[in-house]
Length: 451
Image (cartoon, rainbow, N blue to C red):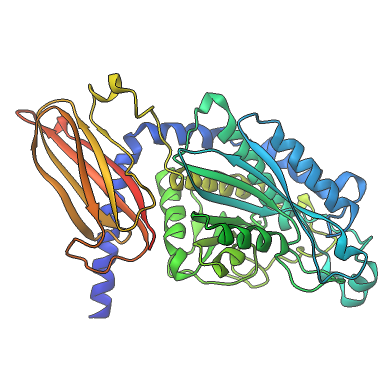
């Protein structure tokens, strides 16, 4: 019986995501994201990684060293090249560090792409490095001067972050998200010799977000995305609350035919990156990493022998893998941020075309409003689905004359009396009266219930 239920759920997912894939392939958003994906530059990624591993001659980005400081300033300057980004340094301290390092400022570099609403998606990667696997004595005695290029861990993640920032900021792409996006280069993710703990930079960001009451749609950490000489494989690490983000990544891999191998849900969970700081504060957050964990072998992975050593150089990387994971991350963040393709106030547009508006408010609790436009008399159906493809509610199922309409969805007033927080899809299907199936119009959008 349990296996039967699993097969039914799998079929439901295939149906809803299959329909969504068909919609997405014809939608202008797909064209826009495809263009950005194609623009991801291998040359840019390689250049960023080499600059970071050299660390301005220091060949180390170990925390509390000049190489790490230089990396933060360089990342800030790189992001400031894009006028559409609002770039700032978030300053923090490691209070447990030995004096005088406990008063030395460290930095997260935060770049913001303003959306229609202040709720935001985070894409993050840490820029510091480590050489802790060079031997306990060597690491403890030489941490301040040891060579720690950190090409894979984690210049790869930062390079992806910078290239995605470039693509999102390119005016030719006209990228306009509904949700605000924050691209964050985190400091002090790695553990050190003269202080306790790790993830200090992301802890600072996550705690302040929680204290402010920020509404974070989801967070993705890119950490070690480039070592695999044999396969184009990447792993998703997510807890149950955050599984929907992992499903988005898997779906985008299929939608855009990226050809990556990934693990399937239920995903493993582990705390060894900056996503964990956000999970601790109750937010949905996942880790994208070359294997979970990278010190173990897997069906498509041989344990990385280089990370946290002086040999973690760009020459050990599979740059095709780095590019594809960058492309996948770009597509997934674009999807999660609900890209808008037109000005929804442009009545000249919406009066002559079918159009489904983004629900408002979004995220919502417990109710939200959905507007839509019908240009000619049509049979209209608007249905809500959950992430597993189960039908949650039918909001509209009737003939509508030409005009602009409004319907409401109440997460309490429906046959599923206990809807949980998470991502939901609402789909409009319209067929013009006295016309064939070729006149069908279908569009799907997503909305977030946050209790």
